[in-house]
Image (cartoon, rainbow, N blue to C red; front, side, top):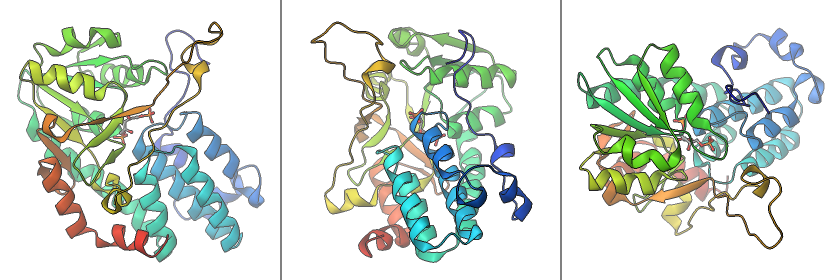
Length: 319
Ligand code: RUB
C-alpha cells in the first residue's frame, strides 16, 4: 500500500490503457496469451487498482479486444469475459459492454460509446452548477470529476474520504491539480460538508429498473442528509450502467469485500460488514445526468431501454 499522502492504487490512465490498433502495443504487453496479461488486468480490477465503473468497463473491453486480436480463440475470450464479470459483482456497465461486444464483435464501437458518452455527460453536467456553487461529492467518479474539471466557473468542491479504500483522495487530488478549491472531510463529516452545499453530484455503478441507484457505500446516507438540507442530488452516469437483469426481477448482488480492508486484526467474534455499495432510493435523486440528457430516475430507465434495446436483447439471448 502507498504512503499516507498517496492513494495506493492508480486509476488506469487513458494513456497507459490506450490501444490504437497497432499490433506492437499488444506485443509490448507481458504475460500469458502470447502478450496480453489477462490475470494482471483482472487482479487490478479486483483490488480496486482499476477503480470506478467506467474505468473497469473500458479496461475490460480493451482486454477482450486485445485477446480477440491476438486470435487466442473464442473459448479463451469467453473464459476471460466470465472472469472479468466476476471481478466486481455489482458492475452492469462492465457486463453490458462485454455482452454487446461479444454479441457483435464490435469492441471499438463499445469503446467509442464509452468515450462519446463521457463527452455528452460533461456537456449536460456543467449546466447543473452555477457560479460560486459549493459542490459535494463522495468517493471518486470519473463522470463527476470530468464535469467538475470542465466547468468554467468559480466552484468549490467538498469530498468525503470514503473509507476503507479512500477513493475520495483521488477526487481531492484531481480537483487540486485542476485548480479547483477543495475541502476534504472524513466520512462522518458529511453533514458538515453538505449542510450549506448547493448541489450533490455522485456517480453510479448501477441504475435499476425500479429507479434505484447503486453507488459507493455512504451514498444513500449522504443523499438523506442532502434531502434534509434541501440540497439537490444528481447522479452522473453513462446510461449503460442500467442493469437489464433488474428488468427481469433480479436484484443485483451488493459486493461485500474483505474484512481486512476495514480492520486488519480484529478481535475474534467481530463480524465485519464491508459492503462496497448501497442503493439510493429514486425519491432522493433529483435527476440522472447521462449522455441521453437529465431525467428523473424512472424516466431515465425508460429512455435507456428505448435508446439501447440491445442491452435487453443481449441478456435475453443469454449473453
Ligand atoms: C466507485 C464508485 C463510483 C462509480 C462511478 O467505486 O462508486 O462512484 O463507480 O464511477 P469503487 P465512474 O471505487 O469501489 O470502484 O463515474 O468513474 O464510472
